[in-house]
Image 1 (cartoon, rainbow, N blue to C red):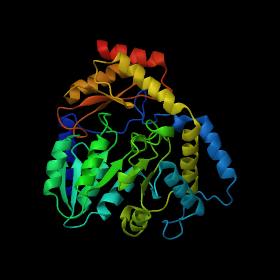
Image 2 (cartoon, rainbow, N blue to C red):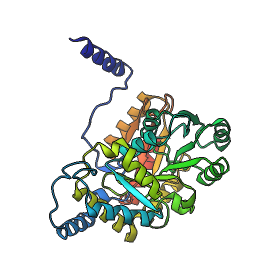
Image 3 (tube, rainbow, N blue to C red):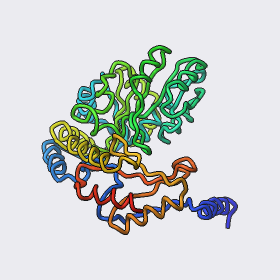
Length: 369
């Protein structure tokens, strides 16, 4: 075995020994409490029909984009979609990226410069951490949702300051204190960046997210809305000023140097937003969350679609997930290093299509397991 291959195998063996080895898995229990398809749009026949009808009205739809958007891959429909989404979310402009990861990488790697400061919540998503690492700015973390600790970091920050949070955190399902954080950013002239991946479709009028719910539009430097969760499609949009959009077109490498999404993908995003705006799925989901809260008041229920049961080690979390899967519930264990050691857990996702009886049965199993 070549030295490089030997190194790779040693790292895999080490993961295996500690029960941390990741593997692709296509087996699923029948009752979905795992996916991020909060509103059921990924499986929606209504959305599928809307997409089919929309594509039929557009002439010359290709199977692929044929190039990056700066070369041959741009389309008037894509730009019209960016304008309509910016209007929908109450922003001046937006730029679509091929994924939420690409959006966060492109945003944070290109904007903060040497001498600037990025301050991230300690539980921020990996894509935002990676984007910050690619910049030349100083980086600090503040204690999760701790406004006092954030202020300490702001007091020592230099240059242009960027504070990065999620409105709803992907592992615990808890909300950032956005109003307090935005007020603090205004006081210290810091630029607030908010990832709304797990809030859109659930909170705010027509599912527009927590920025809309708290009416903080004018206090946000940049907002990331991803399409692969509640909207059931794929990709993301960075929302902000026209200046921000133009800057990202010129400097965000994850936008510049990649083949654009095919037009059929953009159509799906547009149609998903139309359906979200007129549908009742968000209201139904909030009812399901409320039911879970009532039943699971001693199981750390959150106000979002993401619910967490802590087991504090990998083996216990895996065993608990296996027991639930044997009962037909598709619940997955989240293990270290995805979460810090000692915070291994079950991550339960609620959906508009989960029946009341399914939620009741799940909670009963959680309480007796």
